[in-house]
Amino acid sequence: MSKPRSIFEDVTSDSPLSKDAPKAGAIERGSGGGGARGAVRLWLMLLFALVAVMVVVGGLTRLTDSGLSITEWAPITGAMPPMDQAAWEAEFAKYQQIPEFQLQNSHMDLEGFKSIYWWEWGHRQLGRVIGLVWAIGFFGFLAARKIPNGWTGRLLLLGALGGLQGAIGWWMVASGLTGERVDVASYRLAVHLGLAFVILGLIAWYMLLLGRKEASLMAARRLREAKLFGMGTGLLHLAFLQILLGALVAGIDAGRSFVDWPWMGGQFFPPEAFDLTPIWRNLFENAGLVQFMHRMVGYLLVIFAIVVWRVSRRSGNQMVRMGFTLACVMIGAQALLGITTVLQASPLHVAITHQIGAILTWVLILNARFLAGYPTEQTIRS
Image 1 (cartoon, rainbow, N blue to C red):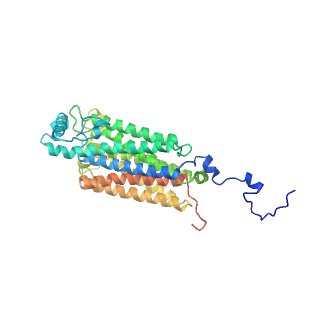
Image 2 (cartoon, rainbow, N blue to C red; image 1 turned 120 degrees about the vertical axis):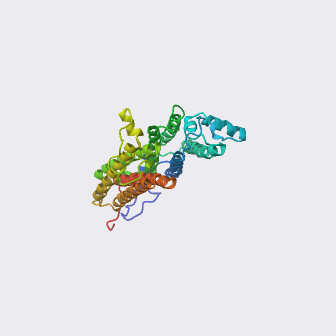
Image 3 (tube, helix red, strand yellow; image 1 turned 30 degrees about the vertical axis):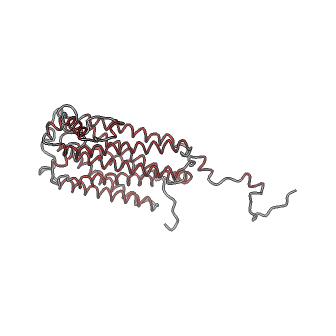
């Protein structure tokens, strides 16, 4: 017969009661918290940085009119640039056959061609590096059985979207290799950039999720601020529309067509906004109308951000309030940067800074939405 036990007595590993005691971390192991969450998150951080650099290099490639310098899609053999004079002359000869050279760059010599070739080659090479980093990380974690429960499909999706992005990139480039077009089709550029931001958004969201324990996420969901979460979703969608319109502006150099503000050509609505036929082409190819749409959605985004920020001030969670404040401030800064870009006729350094601002804005909106959906714990004092 066992002796009576004191209620203050520690239950040790030798105690029969300890056999049925709940194990620490059981929720994490049974609810998606298994695996190397920290290591996977670091890998995603690397992927995010590479994709962000890819977006910036892609913007520079477009702004320097370098995107059509490589006229073939060779995912494997294209990794090697021309290595001798004969190879350079062969590449240049291919470029001389497309409309961009014949109608716009017929004065270009081999040295000038090299300067645009390296931008496009670097852009494509970075895409290969991203694919390699994803493959090594994904299959490495898979082989080691370190992927958290429920995350295999999510991480596989990133690789699938990356492959699709490569195909869309070539679909975009192909639009400028035939006919009389001297640039890629603006709507294809918008699809290409839009998918890049979708990939960036997914990686950022996964990083945020993996930054918290599964048990903490489950508890936080019960505290979700549904109204703010929904408004954050709306803010995200409106920002995405603005990003797509920004791609249309870049695709036809619309940022250099009207360089006055707040007017356009001295009036509110740009002249000759519907001159192209059929009329739907104006939505994609009329510089005045495309820039006008980009401006109007920008104003709406700023106004809606202020409304969301005012609502967020009622939140009892300090981190939620801070998240929406940062997003709102960045949206305002991005609007001012956009105005500066217009007034200076889109110089390279200002235009690319505006694109970097779009990435920061996107991430901060995602972060604010995440904090509303999964509020962090706070002390009574805070």
